[in-house]
Image 1 (cartoon, rainbow, N blue to C red):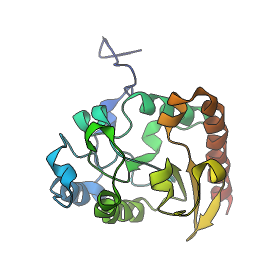
Image 2: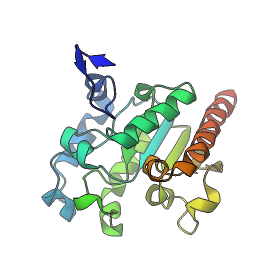
Image 3: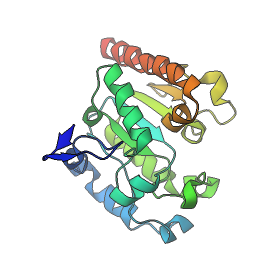
Image 4: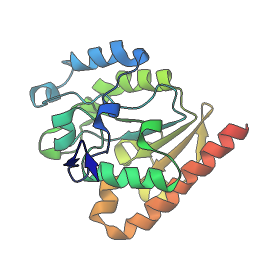
Length: 207
């Protein structure tokens, strides 16, 4: 696959230009995120990574935090996890540019460590505004940190792939793509869980 006659970097989406487009409803919010000094991650980041995708998406994916490539480009899920995520979306008939994708924290934790509770809390208002703008019918949480926003006392190994309705939305906790890359035995599990997304979107379309 090539882009403008040049090979696409491994793990990079085929159309970065499309992902950089910011729809009007997000402009002010993304500026606030870029100017945010609320936690220590501001000292380490190269770029903020607010999110990407359409404001009218029926599906929102919420991960944990940006990695090295995401920090460099300012876009979520651009590295190997992003490549795997795109494959999973394609497997259920969706392209990346149809889905709104973000993380619980908008700046990269140093050395790719887990985001702290304080850092997640500092970004929570931004995430709630994103949810309000997009108003998705289905939210899939990718990894335990985003899952804990809805299911703080449960284990991802026990509830992944379960579809639960909260405040009129279907919430589906799922393993993070990086977990499937580290542990090949999880790939089929993640693929099956993505089928739950497809069924949930169809269900919500009918109601």
